[in-house]
Length: 148
Image (tube, rainbow, N blue to C red):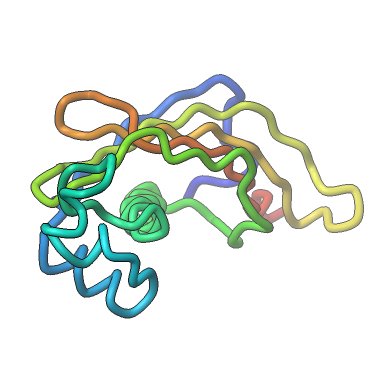
């Protein structure tokens, strides 16, 4: 199990692989972000996207799927997150793209009021199959301290 004490500032990690499909892009958009360039090739062709693109919020969901799989694989004693900062959608994500993640731990601190946990901030960069950064954000993770 990975606890707060095991997290090292400056450490980096690469993980994940998520294949973006046309059907998933459209299904997500129909339910959560029904803008024309997320729903139709014809409508998207008339925009700066040029073709059907995934919602930025959908991209965040795909990233979250990879993050949770990575936390499970590394058996982190995670306790969720109070939020993210500095979210930026840098480039469109298209059906046929394959996404992956790179993260760097920026800092960490023990909780003053809850000694059973600490928090850490990490910079997430998401790349497509051409190693083009498509998304960045700074996440705040809560994690258990090692049991006494």
